Structures are given as C-alpha cells and as structure tokens.
Amino acid sequence: MPPKKILIIDDEPAIQMLYNEEFVDAGYTVASAYNGEEGLAAFTEDPPDLVILDINMPGPNGIEVLRRMKEQRPDVPVILNSAYQEFKQDLGAWASDAYIVKSYDIDELKETVRRLLA
Image 1 (tube, rainbow, N blue to C red):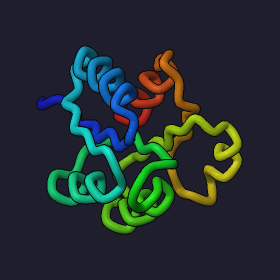
Image 2 (image 1 turned 90 degrees about the vertical axis):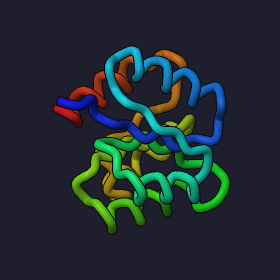
Image 3 (image 1 turned 135 degrees about the horizontal axis):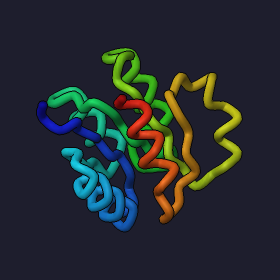
C-alpha cells in the first residue's frame, strides 16, 4: 500500500520544515503550501489523505480554505493548527476534524494524524 499523503498548509518555514521532517520520518508522503491559494491548488490538483492547516496566513485564511476544501472533498480530514488556543472553541462551527495548538512538540499532532488516517 502506498504511503498516506499529508498536505501541510502553513506560512511559517520553520513549522513546514519541522512537520515535513517528522511526517516523512514516520512514513508519510508530504506536500507543502505556504499560503491559502497554494494550498487550495495543491488540494485540487492532487488530493491528499489529510490536511494540516494553519488559520492565520496570507491569501484566503485557513477558515476560508477549510470551507472550500470541505465543499470539494468532505471526506478528507483537516486538522486546524494554530498558535491561538481561543480558536479551539469554534471548532464545531468550522467543520474541521481536529484542532491542535501549534507547538514545536508535535506528539499530539502526530497522534491525531495517526488516529484520523486509521
């Protein structure tokens, strides 16, 4: 079976590098996008098995990107990943599959990815 593909949409190069390294080491294929437009294009052209999506970034923000992705492919799990804890309370309204507060300790994120792709 081919490895599961994760699309990481985040405008922070350090986060992209960390997540890419961690998920490739864990056996996933990883694609990266640095803003909402790039993320939507990558999602449409080669749909991933899961998306890790920042909320606050250039172009359409993560909430708008999430809305458009769920219109196209509601079956693809999306993890909102933000530095802002207060966004977590709105999780249900946004129809994301999980919300993880951004951190350089990514054990919770890795476990959530494993759970959603199981």
